Length: 234
Image (tube, rainbow, N blue to C red):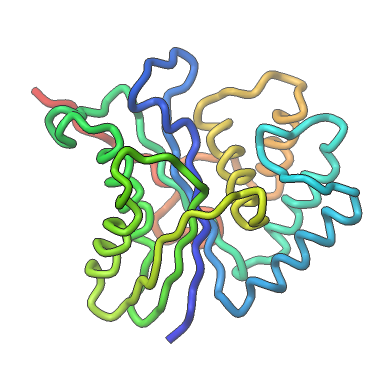
């Protein structure tokens, strides 16, 4: 049985509770690696941070012209690591969310149901999982424990030991998740400005990927994007 770790983050979670005329999709995503590879991956990330004298947290919202080469090196690392690290995200078209009918008018409940969809389809039998998320304030204090229990019971021969919230400023793999998820969200929401640092980084990522970011086949392993098609009620 292999021990696996998943590092998760979300982008635009406020779309379930407020109108945003600019963005269409809420995204939830994660990076997955074997526990035995974690320290090696962290060392590679920290080496890049050291080379560029970056001492603080890195994330999509901090991408700038001045630090563009640093972020490009992180993208290079993501692809150089090949199957040692994998990304998956789901995108939900917020305008089509029917919170009243499907989620008891509870945006937080709806959000974690989609979190479950992201992770449940990534959990395989005969593996043992530890899942980490960025810190998030929930009205229901037991949300992560409930999520853990549902995931643990969803597979007969897989074990989900914990779903734990950690401060992203202390966890470079959560920061890496934020960066890759931010890139995916920028493409799907068409939110970058032409000639900006973020636009250049998005184009650089897609040049490494070999195609523009969009929904991928289910069997895509390295960089998987699932755009959920919600059915409108009659």
